Image (cartoon, rainbow, N blue to C red):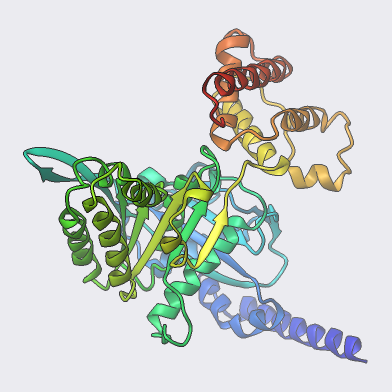
Length: 466
């Protein structure tokens, strides 16, 4: 009975939606489509909890209004039978020529990351985010110590052109990016609505830890950029400050915590502007643990511990600001300072990519070489399609299956290393005048084998983990 009632309710909702659509197209002009879709919100939200997120990168010199931009983008998307998710739709691929004068790209995401296509015959709630990329390079903040200038931090205004498309080109095990984005969005909403931190504890601190080369720092930067875009209705811009931990805990800084306080005073100045989302990135946070350990062993002056304590104190003092997010990374999980670990709300391990993530990395690299005409164009299917076909090899999937075999050979490699393999294949094992995909894939086999051999040699000679 319950199942029948649910089906009838869904059928009634769909009937209402179809009725409104018919009435709209009979009596209202096509230019009102976007306003009309907004009126349908009550029907859509009843049918689906998930939301289609549409991020629109507007050109710097465009003077078009946001409402008009949303209307044009809605028309561009609805003219298609389906849209590609988690991959930017570039202006050169737009159907509407007038949209090209105002928009650089459209990025759509919907629910879980493993969904790659979305048919627009479905009804769902849509949220639009319009932003422009800041063209300026990072500003380097320096501090003077005994007449010597030391780099203390790097500062970007977000969204930055430097991080454009970074989010979509980072591949991890399922749901890592989705969970991190949900966490930081929830933390910022809690802060905005003034949830009592003494009742529900949260510090707005993220800790990403794992082996080198897995993209932890890049993910932090991409996360700050993504959050700035998603919270564009709340903040007019983002500020990303990357603290140079190597300088912070060097011999020049071990004398006093005053320079740490000076650095955070400049950060607090940024935080006073409630229209700015301020993200603080501290790379290799295990430097804190190193400083404490060195001090306790007597290898560093006791003043060194004051630098660590000053940093922890400053982090505690800024968490009261509703517009701050602290992002940290560590290559050595076992070396993270316990005093800091307690402050982190989410501790996410970032390991080497799994088979699916490796496949995405390799297929993207191959498609880029096809785009730039280094190798001939062939069909490379996405991982989900191969999975639905039971990973069976046929004329259409033969190259895709070959790429999948390369993925199995590459297990355990970091994302940084994986992205070097295509270059090494071209440079060392393939002539530039060859453009056959089968030859390139064979060259990749040799590049993978060489990378493994070289890695073992380094490990044996240094005793370090590669």
